[in-house]
Every structure is written in C-alpha cells, then in structure tokens.
Image (cartoon, rainbow, N blue to C red; front, top):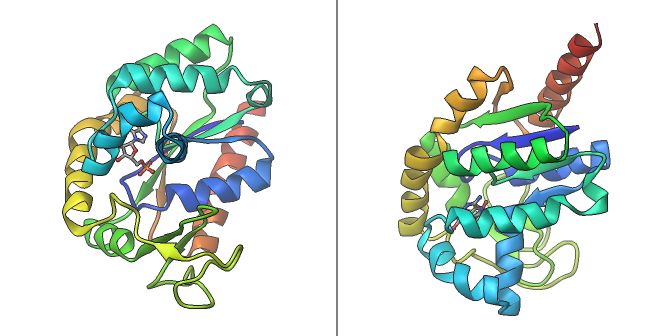
Amino acid sequence: MRIVFLGAPGSGKGTQSSRLREHYQIPLIATGDILRAEIATGTPLGIKAKGYVNEGQLVPDDVILEMIEKRMAGKDAERGFILDGFPRSLPQAEGLQRIIDGLGKRLDAVLKLDVSKKVLLERMTSRRVCGSCGAVYNLSSSLAPSTAGRCDRCGAALVLRADDTDETVKKRLLVYEAATAPLIDYYDAQGLLVIIHGENSVEEVNEEIIRALESRAAGKKK
Ligand code: AMP
C-alpha cells in the first residue's frame, strides 16, 4: 500500500497516519517529524531547515526531495509507505512522481482529511507534544494526557510545538492554501483522491479511511 495524506496542518494527518502504520505495518514517512529530529540534533539539514519550520514556512523543495528520495530508498519502504506532510507543493508532487516511477511503483490513494478552519485553529493551539519521545496530545479532546502536562508514555513534560503559536498557526494555514491545496485537483485528476470527513472522532475517521482503502483495493482486483 502506498498512501499520501493531504490536509491542512491540524487536520489529523499525524494521528491517522500513525494508526494506519499499525494497521498495515508499513513505514510512516512524516517530513515534519524528520525535520524536527534533524533540528533537535543540529545536523546540517536541521540547521538549514530550522528558520523555515519555526516561521511556519515551507522548507525549499530541493532539500525536501533529497531527504525523501533517500528515505524511500530504504529497504523497509519496498512493501509500501505512508507519506504524511509530503508532498506539500506542486514541484514536490512532481518530484514524488519521478521517484515512484523510478522505483517502478504507483500510488494507491491520496487521502484528504476535510476539517473546517475553526476546528483546525482550535486543534493546533491546544496540541501539546512530549519534549522527550514526541508523543502528541490534545488538551481539548479525547487525546488529552491522563496527568496534566505529562506524557502518558514516558512521563516527560509536554510542550507547545515552536510552530503551534497563534501567529505561526495562521501563517501555516495561509501557506497550506497557497502551496498545498492545489494538490487536491492534481490528485483528483489522476483518480487518486479520497476525501475523508476529518471532524469525527479519531476512531470513526480511522474506520472511514480503512473502509475507503479496502473498497478501492477490492475495486482494483475486479
Ligand atoms: P508538519 O509536522 O507536517 O506540520 O510540518 C512542520 C513544518 O515542517 C512545516 O510547517 C514546514 O516548515 C516543514 N515541512 C514539513 N514537511 C514539509 C514539506 N513537505 N515541504 C516543506 N516544508 C515541510
């Protein structure tokens, strides 16, 4: 299975893509997570990316495409992968197409999580992440931690992501509208787009996604 997750920041891509990873046992490639890890360890890529990420701007396409090409060449990605947060611009989508063609593969589906702007803003500013293991929580939903301010998994303190401040969140939504939203038409024209209503509970959204993927796979076998 080779899946792309599209959707505005805060639409639930991270939460749903990690569920799908468990379900299909294929690697999850989340460009935002890779960049944050590179920034935290101060690698040359991290140093290049830091300013863009903290400002809510896109890291240049060539930097991202090089990073993705390396990651997709990994042995574990042979059976399939889930892309979260990539592609985020038309040049990235075209770059992805070249990489996939080069591997002799095809995408199975592009999932677009539909969430209203009001809900996106609420979700992002109430998101907290574990400063140690990276687990993600949301203070205003069923994804709240069981002890306030502490990670359920490792007990470390929860923090606001550097780019989840009110001002940066608004910038990220504008960047999404300008650079990423055009990909909806791009993938629709290829017959790959699947729209999922993203405001239901985490479980319901997860079930809808799996139903949609299974019915596409069954349709292909016929
Ligand atoms: P995310 O965790 O997906 O919300 O990404 C956080 C930030 O990382 C974004 O606001 C961008 O600055 C950067 N980023 C992540 N993925 C990409 C990408 N595909 N292209 C450019 N920048 C990216």
